[in-house]
Image (cartoon, rainbow, N blue to C red; front, side, top):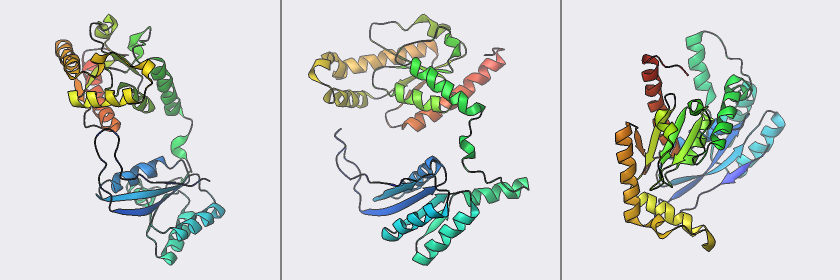
Length: 302
């Protein structure tokens, strides 16, 4: 069992934009009997709604015994704050909540209210199996397959049979194609991404593909310029690209070319300027659902 404390200081991002002013810091203890991913995501979603505050996260994954719990309770006593858990063992949850009440520390289980809703509707109790969502089932191996496919078809490397892809992302440099591809792959979506390079035609296979959804990622000229500048600052002098790479007029031309291409081909575009990777992926998944429905109506099957 490992614990980690993380804090994000309110300093400059280095990209010209300052992080929001943080007025209050508080300790947030996150206890899980699995990886803790669900708990971290849920707690951050809630924390983000409280402006001017920043959580110092203490993450305790794989907590499955009273001995582990005792050490965590000692840590909570030293640095009191909010305690959240995703533990399926009701006895451990009861013990944690009782000890937190004694210390006057707020403690909540994210799973209990959800279990109650499911149980009241389904009429049966849950199995309360630790780590059930991480079983090595068909869905898990599908995700691994998608990740392998996506890594092998990054940055313009197209599969021999392009119909194997679920999504093809296109876009000019620095529009988040690769991280979005990896995120989609983690959702089981086989994704290839292809850069749009001025003066270079896209492979004709993309236009002929029927099964994959082709989506262009675009952004504002200012956003692309900012990201490209940051990339150059992180590279050595020997790796500097051509001056047009960060020229605003050139970037505007690249984006205009992308828009004209997508309008001509009927490919959807997503502006990622103010979107997180998760929001971009959600928009792509919604478009893919429409794409699959249209293909099904047209009689196409993978």
